[in-house]
Amino acid sequence: MKPLPSDEELDTKAKSTAETAYGKLEFGGKRALLMDVAGGFYSLKKTLRSDIGFFEKDFMTRAGQEGARSYLLEFHKSLKGRTPKEAIEEMLKQYSMRGYGDFRLAKLDDTIMIADIRSSNTAEAWAFQTNRDMQREPICSYSAGMLSAVCSLAFSDTHGAEIEFGAVEIECAAEGD
Ligand SMILES: [Zn+2]
Image 1 (cartoon, protein in one colour):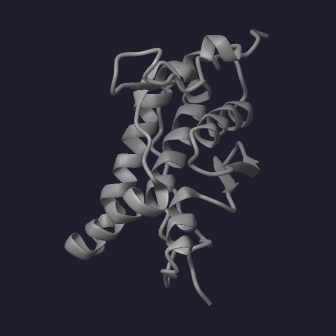
Image 2 (cartoon, rainbow, N blue to C red):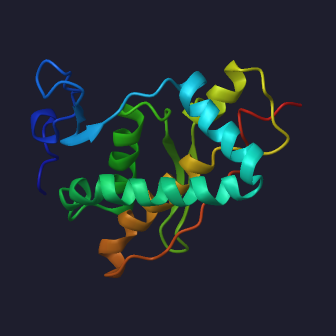
């Protein structure tokens, strides 16, 4: 089995402006930007929710999905020959390293293709918690989109094509009781 790419090959250390052009930051070989989660990211979600309401969920899910597909496309190639379980775990690590939350694959049923993925500290839920803005329903729509892209990529080798996955958030740390 092909070994996983090393940290150097993956290039997962954030490169500061000193190493790149001023005003540019790189992570995983891609230009990245740092966003303050409780401030900038929370404001982005709140603004979308107040202006477009329910559609925020749909928009953020699609953004999370497309973003993950584009970010993971190259990385996924290095996972050739891995089982869907291994592939999901490696791709989740990428997102955890980027600060989106501690994502863990709790259960996977390969035959019916259902994955139970958990995170106790998604950046999205944490932003609402930190701003003491508890919600009535799950709000991690960006993460949900990202997770559906991860599963879609993970099963694409086994099935010879990319299957569209959906993600349903059952419980959210941003929900008040
Ligand atoms: Zn959540």
